[in-house]
Length: 328
Figure 1 (cartoon, rainbow, N blue to C red):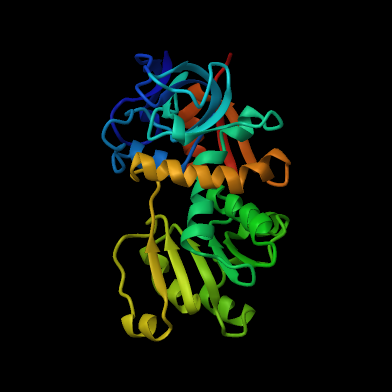
Figure 2 (figure 1 turned 60 degrees about the horizontal axis):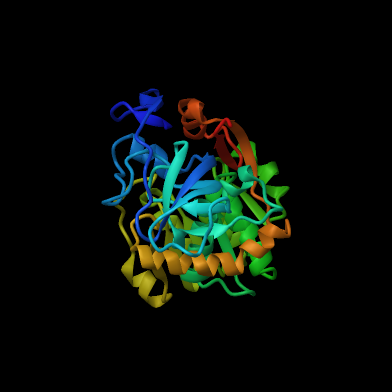
């Protein structure tokens, strides 16, 4: 099969369009003929040599696919050949065929395109898990989402708007994306390039702070995030783009009864991911089928142009998801 092959680690130029053996599904797995996949930040980190796939998963980049079931592993009954599916994979999405555990797939509604289907698993499941489940966002609370027009952030906005419609949504964005984020229907947007977001949070909330923060920056934002949290506030950390070490005022954290929750999705056990995806499919996919949630797509390009897609993400030139399709 054709696939994107990483010729070592480093910049986007290491990604090449080449040949790889076609995988075979094992027990409890399905083989998917890939229609589309998308670029996620962990793909960049893996390409750089810093985020290897879990043991047993494909070394090929890519964490989510949409497509049709091509073959079934032994004993598989949840799907049949030809079913339209979206799937979360531990690796292997940048290819014409990918293997997924059947519990990590869900039926893709006929009303949803393959391009949109390729956006649903990594970012939307991440947003649902960390804001709704781990962050335990309640319907009368305020959430701060870092990330402007990134895939997880735009997914989180839509999920909160549908599942917690009474919540106040505050988003940080770079100067060039403030107006576009406002157009998504959030309550407030903070330009983090020109404003100390923790001070602006104090102004916007009457010094109360926010109840939940979804953060992918890490160390560089830790102090400001803790200042921004309200009493009993929860900081959910899903990335460390801004570093891994920072000082923490433990006394403030204790007095305000704040929580810091670290979270990753990729390395969780198979059964745990199966349970998460089942809850996501029940809570969120009906909104996708009815077009109340529609992935925001920035760019669509052929999979063979993966290097260009990575460069686009690294330049922060996108707003929404970067999707790559397989030519039929």
